[in-house]
Image (tube, rainbow, N blue to C red; front, side):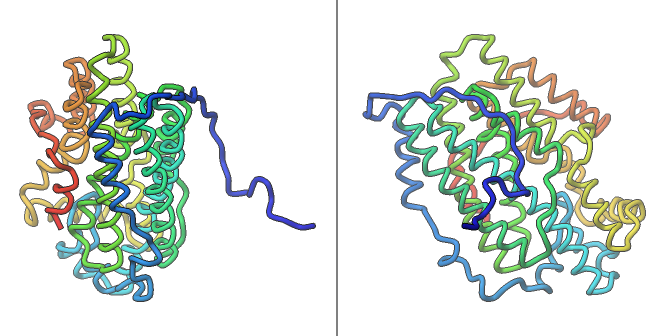
Length: 358
């Protein structure tokens, strides 16, 4: 009798370690998590029913609203002067690369969320992690389907793979919560929201609206859960969590870690027949004319503007950790990073923050 292989050739593996924790108390221990769980149940959606896949991708609107690392490329004279077919080729391949890494990240989040069901010690935490597991499966489904309309799934960036491996393999549920809910999900939420607000491609905008709502709850889960337990940790335990958070953020955004997303996308432009150095020089030349605020935003970004406020909100941003982040920013952005402040605050209601930006 023939059948599918036990292990398909596309698979990979990493070692995973955790202790499964029973909790014989079924009463609510963290009311905010029980409320978040109820909200998650109410917000479930079905991709094949709720997204209009029949209309496909609007090529013209897609190419009109293409951005690179948050910079509105479509507003530059350089982009406007490109041939329409080349615009489509560059934008679809670049976006396929970016969405592929979101897709891989969502698979990592799927596995971590399923681990959290077993590993977390509080019943409310287990309940919510179960709903997140379903959310992440849906995100993998929709990103894979959209990428198929664009191009093909690209390989995972090595730096993202290292973050996912570290989060999956740690035996500490607290490190899993920090690595996934605070850093990976925080970065994803910030990027998804920005992309949803900037794109005029209807299917992508609709898809990202649904996904962003889910991600807001996922980050909220980490913030609410860690806020409830961090106060009981020792100084050593708190420092270890801070270090885990910093290393995850460093791998994802520090250009010194190799193969940043922006550099990788410029290489894709080369494959399409454009010289990356010329492209970069042209974009830098037009940057200040298009948006004088871009210089400040490039330093802020999702780490300073979202991940750091998340860590501060749960009590995981000591002076020592601030020094680590400041050093990373200075290494990447130079002198202009030396005087930066870390005063940004996390939105009080993340779901309202997402909805209010549409």
